[in-house]
Image (cartoon, rainbow over the protein chains, first blue to last red):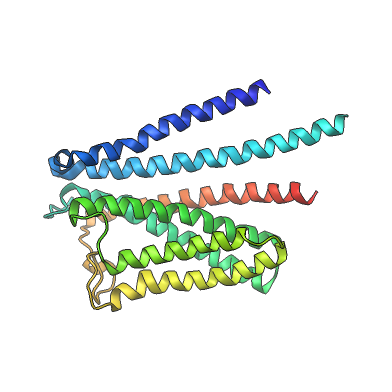
Amino acid sequence: MIKIRNFLLLIAVLCGCNVFAQNAPAGNVEMADSMMSSGKMYVVVAVVLIILAGLLLYLISIDRKVTKMERTINAEKEQEKK
Amino acid sequence: MPALPILHETIRNLYFHVCMWFAMMFIFTVSLIYSIKFLLNPKEDFDIIASQTAYTGMIFGVLGLITGSLWARYTWGAWWINDPKLNGAAITMLSYFAYIVLRSSMDDAQKRSRISAVYNIFAYVMLIVFVMIYPRLSQVDSLHPGNGGNPGFNTYDLDNHMRMVFYPAVIGWVLLCWWIASVNIRIERINRYNYNK
């Protein structure tokens, strides 16, 4: 159980990082001037960050699915032992 | 890198935003093939592949919409404009959302796989019509390159150096998309196996 709890904690931390990553492009949007500077390079940066954040979020959701499956399998195993 | 007005360095988004749509088209085509296969030969595995690839395609489509919206803000001046290609893409995404809703609304597994396979074919037709055909037919020219009566790539502002990066990038993103889809498929297979046990 402790293992699972640690795992969930890790997921929570990752989620936290992700929220931060998602906020980054939105924060830049407010400052349109900086987005427009250096040949609009930061638009590309923001696009890459969005894709990275999206794929990371999706990875976390897949991870949760697998964790759920592991739990059901473990529960079945414990039932069989009894 | 070609030096272009308005776009400036954002031309590099070609390797990300455009590749999202390429990956989405690829994975939805796989989904279509397996839906047809399921209708011809109703094996459970075909249904799993068709549904999971469609879900994965949605992720890439949504990412494509968001990145496109951001790109549009700094090149065309607005988050969303009344562009035939944008509206077409939005309509297709909605029709694939409907696919998810349709699937989750039915309990009977047999019925669900059959109806969703038929709907998937319909959604793919919508995709082709709204993303490929409608922007070329519509009276208002899309701001996307290659629309307004011209076939796609010839009018792209691609020079050969960009092509050398763009094509491998497309292949890379498509492979990544397939990887995600295959993980989803495997998870769903194990899920069904556990459920049927």
